[in-house]
Image (cartoon, rainbow, N blue to C red; front, top):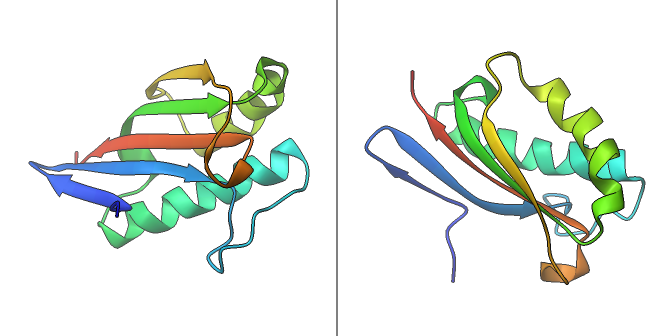
Length: 110
């Protein structure tokens, strides 16, 4: 089994989160709705560890279609202020639960 997150030496390493609700239902709405759900999931995990979006230093976004990139960026950026976390976007063949988007982050207490 996997952990949603691990805390180590002032860091929180958050496992990849897909667009599922806390009840385990896959959100099948717009790209924007999916990203908002993922960010809500990440926010809840960070909050449980005493951190927030301002503490994220690195993010990795996995997507199944690079054409989604622009819309993902439009939502993703609203969760941050400068300096933005380091980040990459990687296109993959498929994701868990048949999701289109997965985001993992690393946060560090400032």
